[in-house]
Length: 167
Image (tube, rainbow, N blue to C red; front, top):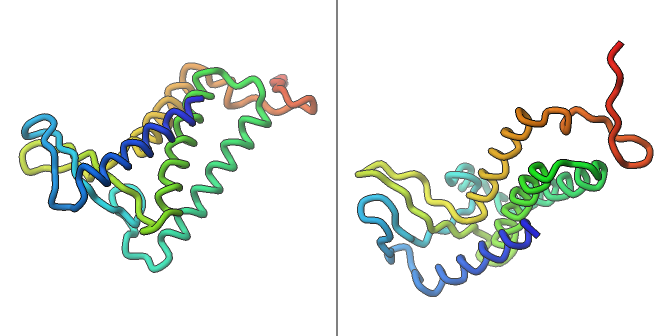
């Protein structure tokens, strides 16, 4: 449900951006001198890295599919994951799917629109999917400290998890 919520919010926000901010010259000031909505098309990954790579859309779409498949496999193999881990994985997979949709649909570029800045210093533009991936990763890190056993359990033949006894 988390994943689906992220996908819907991400795609609806990007549809809005396409209509409200049709070109890169349009912008909407949200919080003066700190936050604007803009329209950027990103062929690369985070912060437009590798944007000039010849096959960037295909490579990054493929990596997204692998990441999503891995998350689904983890959930399937570990039936007793704590809710905080499931929420984190849902946020990450929802963000990955949201950006994957952008990479599949022409012009095969991710739409970024949140422009955070202080004075002349601008954080690279991002979107709801990017935020969800970062929040999910942060939640996984927190969960690894607060519930480390959920990450070290080995799967049992029944699909649950059993902890190995220490000698």
